[in-house]
Image (cartoon, rainbow, N blue to C red; front, side, top):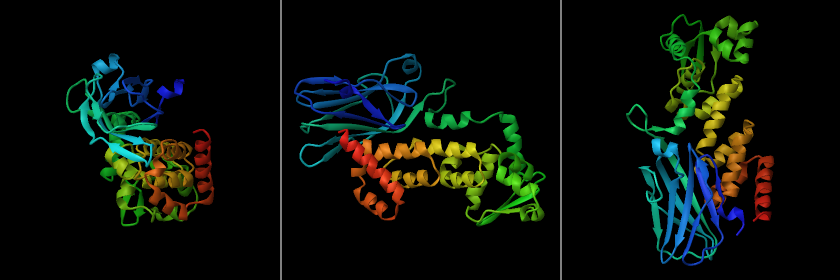
Amino acid sequence: MNESAYRVETTSRLAQWKIDTLSSCTYRKSDPFRIGNWNWHLTVEKNKVLYIKLYPVISNLTRESPPIASFVVRVFCSVGNRHTLIHPGVTDKQLKNIDDFVWSIETPLSGKFIIDVEFLDLKTTSPNGGEPCSIWGEGFSQRQSNATVLASLGRMLSESIHTDITINASNGSIGAHRAILATRSPVFRGMFSHNLKEKELSTVNIPDISIEACQAFLNYIYGSIQHTEFLTHRLALLRASDKYDICDLKDACHESLIEDIDTKNVLERLQIASLYQLPRLKEGCMRYLVKFGKIFDIRDEFNAFLQGADRDLIAEIFHEVLSAWKGF
């Protein structure tokens, strides 16, 4: 059997193992694959019943901080009419060894099938105790610099300390500081450095953003944004970061949008990636749709998407589909 038979393909939160065939009384273990902070294995064991197991590779990290996982497992079988078996799902279960998650399937499976594991969340226990924390929130918090300085900047915004510029959103206004805005954005700096109406009137009009999203935008600039606030307003923040040339915010939005691609948002994310020139997001959406076969799960939505999508984007999608078929 070739080496690819044991390889598990992954995105940031999705693992997929394609198995050509399993004879009776067979045991097979995948190569290790990485999701989050841990390396993982999938195993299948076929006797009278098919057993699927998911567990982390034993290591010092696993012993000291075993993952607390929430995920859904699906099995796609391609013999005859395509059908899907879906595990009810696992929520906040600590996984330490090979017996912590076992799915027994009594339905006979033959021919090619795919094991698909979608991780909804991965948590780890804090060394100081307390509630487990999601690892997908850590990267955002780690990007925050000196906490004292950021807290001071946040107070300047929240308490309107010596504000000298007014931001008019679509449904409200917020006071801000032109020096901070100019430092963070070359577009704002240009507005305040030349004899433009923004400099003369001490106002900036942003009519395409709500007051809530504008507050999140300013909170990011001042270093006081909360992770939940960031997630809620990611798309508006992406538009604002592109418009005002704030590269680190655009990069943060780009990375975050890659992390939770699913069937409900993949087509929207694909359009966003094309519009704002986000190559890694586009690649992630393409892989999810084509390589992982999710295009078949959203046929109606995909057909509707094709009616209004950009022609160049449609051409890229079909190029990916044709390339995948050639390699199948």
